Image 1 (tube, rainbow, N blue to C red):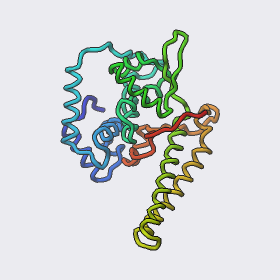
Image 2 (tube, rainbow, N blue to C red; image 1 turned 90 degrees about the horizontal axis):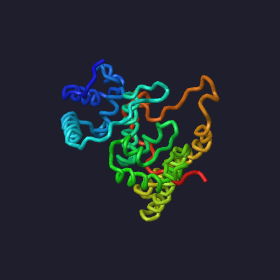
Image 3 (tube, rainbow, N blue to C red; image 1 turned 30 degrees about the horizontal axis):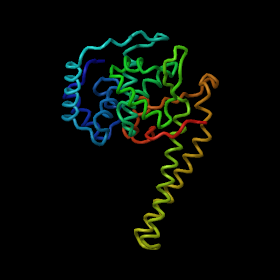
Length: 273
């Protein structure tokens, strides 16, 4: 299986494959590349509907040029616990952040959240985050402020009085409930338009149909989130043989390029009380 950066010709093949409706896994097979490579390439360059080979290639060259010009920093620690492949972990972390970006989360916030989520402790200091992500402390501070305001990280002090940032296992539930609240508000506003446009008119009938649809979807999401909430606090080892959900994994997106749209933690609400 070839390694290294994608070539311009390979990007053209990716664009053609997307235009033909091929899944990421099929495009990867034809190029003899990992599915995660294709998923990351597409999502970081506009997504399956907006991907274009030439702009994607130029953007990659610009990123590579900026990295070469950047001042050298302390190298990242490559030793991984549990015998993990350090390069595979790094690639997954980048892919995970890219998928969250595709759902609407800003770049640095997605990188910080992905970094915290894939650590075994789920907790890092600002210095550790800056070193792992090779960014400035100011960038970390800004990202943490955003994530904290959305209830997606928790601040706490360790034994050395250093401030640590911890991910809450409940953030995915909270993000679903924020989506429900936002959709409910949209339903109420849509129904106000029915009165403005006049009940029985074509435009009002259209709005009423939209409101009923969104109301039904929001209710279903809320009910499913409540029923599944305990999964976030239950070890997968408690149910031997049960499949383990892998949110954002390349395999989840492999079956359909559209998997990148929606469903991410764009505006999570406050953490569980």
